[in-house]
Image (tube, rainbow, N blue to C red; front, top):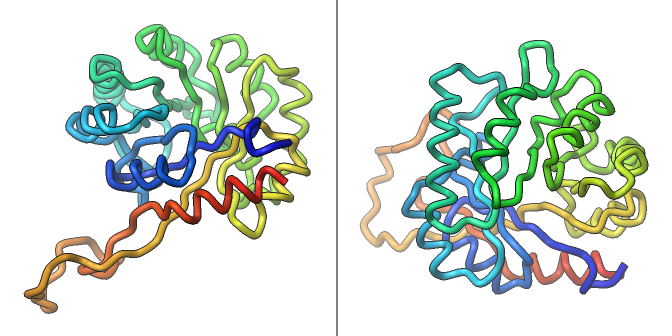
Amino acid sequence: MTMQSLTIEVCVDSVESALGAQAGGADRVELCDNLLEGGTTPSAGSIATARKLLTIGVQVIIRPRGGDFCYSDVEYDIMRHDIAVAKQLGADGVVIGILTPDGEIDKARTAALIELARPMNVTFHRAFDMTRDPFRALDDLLDLGVNRILTTGQESTVLEGAELIRELMRQARERVIIMPGGASERTIRRVVAQTGATELHFAAPKMIDSLMVYRNERVFMGGEMRPPEYLRATTDPERVRTLRQLGGH
């Protein structure tokens, strides 16, 4: 595996982070909002601005809320509308995932979303990791014609799931891209070696200080987790560059 043949996708939750990923050598970004929730659909403004400023691929996550992947009819309608918006604004692809209450791929609604998304490419996200039977889920997604599947091998870390990822790649026989998620500087070489993956998905954040000079430390605008009010995360181009270099050796 060489640096040139390894495709790098960076998960970002702002256009500023997307620009950082591009500066670090990413091939594309997965544009999200609310990464603390695992990523939700970004605003139309974020999609439009990212498309205007980026020369690399832009994948837009279509996820109306955090939590599980069993969606109501209202949430499904939101997803349909958001896919249409992403297409209109020039996204290269969308990232989706819908499950049944029994932990299987919701084939009917997934098929409808894929049809709506084309000719954009379609990634099925880590809803895959919540399926009851990953090999049945893989067969369902092959039937549906998704372009790639993002997974940590149904484990909390990609190294723990590496064996399953390798087995999924064998079963897929290059009919769909299996994209491991969550590699770090410490693990990326092992992830590539143990899975044989040609595409990787990860975040590469760093914390930056607020531009605010006046700071009211008594007030907090978030929820109970209380992240620092005057620090925020953005993508670190140097981390992206380092991960790309490490993954290529």
